[in-house]
Image 1 (cartoon, rainbow, N blue to C red):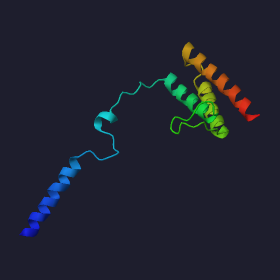
Image 2 (cartoon, one colour; image 1 turned 90 degrees about the vertical axis):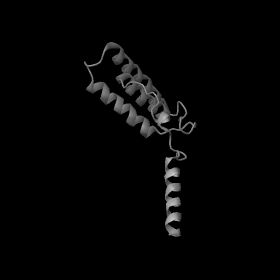
Image 3 (cartoon, rainbow, N blue to C red; image 1 turned 180 degrees about the horizontal axis):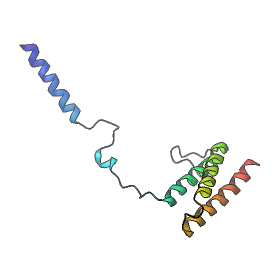
Length: 115
């Protein structure tokens, strides 16, 4: 009979601990932060930002260090070029100009780094 009481206390203790917020796991409030609305502009800009990081033009926000990976930069630039080709005639003027400008700037930076 005494063993059952101890077991019940252990079970109750476990239930209370399970209710507590585990360390390192974001709370519901943190998980539901506002995120921007998906858009072509945001998508292209995020790819370009990754390319700039790979070119060593800006620090990696995860490490706060400047890193250079020309293979990754070329892949991202090629991906943006593919998007440009696949979306021809389907973008509004501002989107098309933004993509054209980003591609030009990234290509020039890549050529400068790869020499």
